[in-house]
Image 1 (cartoon, rainbow, N blue to C red):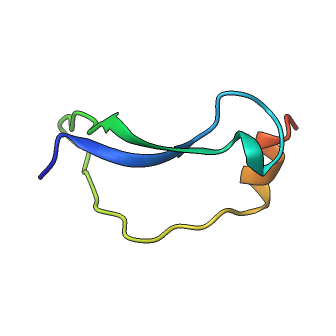
Image 2 (cartoon, one colour):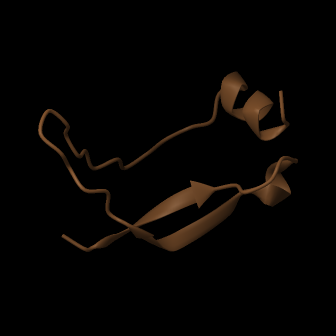
Length: 55
């Protein structure tokens, strides 16, 4: 397993143009009582859009 993951991130509010793929995000440390899952697909819902727009 790699020590980095790919993540879609945003650091400011705005439209789709503020979303960026980063390939160098460190794999999170897993603490007792937590799990780490391998995600192969994801989507965006209304709450994600509203959060990105600053709601």
